[in-house]
Length: 569
Image (cartoon, rainbow, N blue to C red; front, side, top):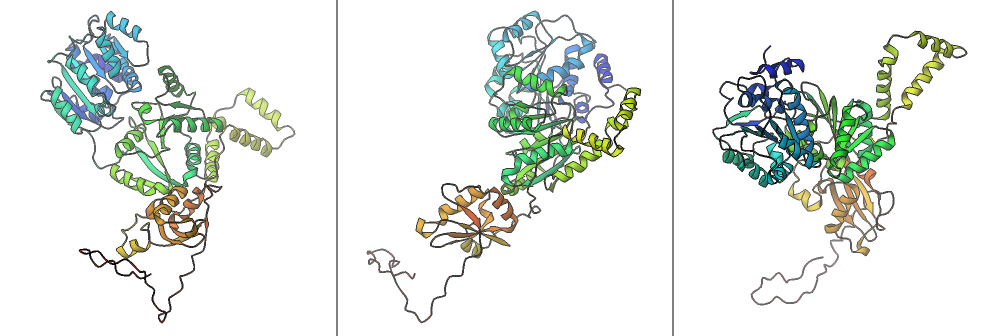
């Protein structure tokens, strides 16, 4: 089967085991595309690197199978992060291996002087990050006068990271007759403006499937008490036992804490965040590739462009902030036709925010509880029964030792010892509080409800008590935020608030009551304590025959409405 127009690239694809091209790779090879600028949108993991490698081959090689001797670069690929640039360098290296291409990488954090010497020695293709490429350009090491093709990979991410000035500098230094291939996950206004400025008669290629979930990714959301998210991550890792797993945190501190916690529990894990040096990041990724580590804990920026082998599981330990981040994170798995699983760990008080995020992303998500220890142990048993240690053929030495073990021991004792050895190498699962099923989205509150219930909540309620009352000048304006913060709930989860002399009773929706109670601090916070409570006693009814009392007020000033009349208590 023929894949590429160039025989050298065609052989490389065959040797790599390609049986067919991906949709984006097919799209860039349509008749008439070989000499045009391209504006391409495609999802993460769709084979974009090979796609533009195939697309610019006719421009660089013409009808030849090999390059001439290296000189000034003929193609420039610009990527937003070091990890993506390194991945692109690896992909193009095997794709162009039989063409004699000399491919250089220019990446921040690496030895700039060595890169400069390599550029001066000559090359055919340069892959780099915007800042480092601009540095080499300013020093006269990177000469772009003979450039025939420039590729902007993940252009949307480069603009999000603030590289617009660097892109302008690089593109303005290239010949006007060059081809410009722009690849982006989304084509927003900024991308359209960039394309209009630097492309001519670009062929628009869109291989994204709108409003449909990634067919190779199974999405699950697990609802957990706010303080048990870390336990949920542990149990998810243990339940699936994927060869390689990627866990996303929102901050560097989150990465540090979760990485240390997983290592303490016995997981082989590495951390990736922006505070690491390039050498540290390279070692971490290599440990994952070599199988020395099974779990990578990372921030979003550090994982941009990260391509890990056999990545079967992605865990959102912290919820993404938008649908683009959700799809990008999740797209690290389910690549190249392989199946993947994506788990969103959802603190109970953020369940509705997660619902809105999922709906905006258009993915089908199954809501479940977190894996429980008994479920994990049951899966461990099934995995043990199919383990190679039981299925591989026994050697003579194995049989000799087995007979020795059975002398004076029953087969049951030996089997039990095997089970204990198997479990001893696995991190222990965590106990997690089971929450009620995911509640339906709340209906809008009626005006009468809003007047009575500060949080606008409705439906079955559970009463709690706060040791603050009228004596402490309690007021719903600051009590409501305090309740939400202490119990990790939203305003809509809080019902009626009844302030009494020495305490305050308030309602929490029954669906959130368990999560609210589990999120409360064990000790009083600033002498404020919340406990479960009974409903407050109804206020005594006024005797209709009793005289009414009025406030005396100052007379109304001339020109003002007569609202200075006495008000009833």
